[in-house]
Length: 285
Ligand SMILES: NC(=O)c1ccc[n+]([C@@H]2O[C@H](COP(=O)([O-])OP(=O)(O)OC[C@H]3O[C@@H](n4cnc5c(N)ncnc54)[C@H](OP(=O)(O)O)[C@@H]3O)[C@@H](O)[C@H]2O)c1
Image 1 (cartoon, helix red, strand yellow):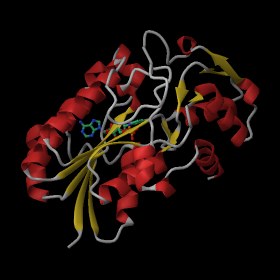
Image 2 (tube, rainbow, N blue to C red):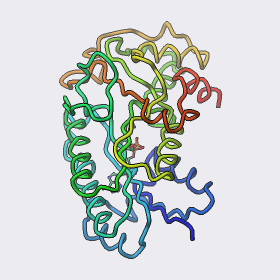
Image 3 (cartoon, helix red, strand yellow):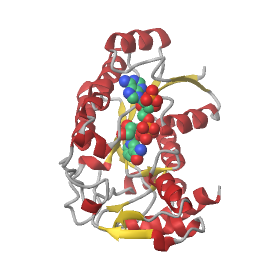
């Protein structure tokens, strides 16, 4: 019998790719639900849908991830990362469903001198990070059979830093980008493939997945690679402190919250690749 996998937040950047990858699997039946089909903040709707569908697995791709917006005026959107995740976890616990969801490197404060491992202490600096920590804790308290995959800045879904850089450079505009925040930029297709690989193996607990950037690259270095890889004039990029970008104050950001990906790499070595290779492949498409 095919394994039934329910995907929530199916219209998200990640949800769209996860759905495609799952549909390419043999012996998997995918039920992909947009917000209009299931609002995960509606606990009664979540409970009755899980009871009716009886999925073996739920992969939650819904969330709110406007880190700067959440700090300034959109904190009211964050409950999807906490209460929404809790509703799904509660239904999963009741109907013995394996529950998978995404989290973020923003659960860490970036003060550690080497990349973070999965069981390092959580210490978010901003509201978005706190909401992801809350979501994680609500999952781990609700059921044992869960998978949480943390990641870093994603691109490739259309609403991301790479698109913004390309739009500005194409228009011949200067673009300010921080040189004091370090990241492991990650192609969304690679993260979706990592989640699917882990979920198909019924992996449990917390995993980190990013493209491999060693100790991290600055956002400016990443932007330069985007410009060069797509044939635009990289001199239009201006390296500035993050406080001078529209991603800056009053938001507190971890300077170097890099995720250690050895635990994932030990299971699926072929799915780990350098960030430049992933970016070049994406820009070539
Ligand atoms: N993007 C990143 O850089 C990044 C990095 C690390 C981790 N993550 C995590 O990965 C997950 C997905 O991110 P993403 O960038 O793919 O998201 P996204 O493109 O911003 O999409 C979020 C989706 O969640 C849906 N949603 C919001 N509230 C909902 C609700 N109450 N019920 C059902 N669906 C709801 C939205 O529906 P509508 O389309 O109707 O608005 C939207 O389709 C999130 O947990 C995020 O925190 C993202």
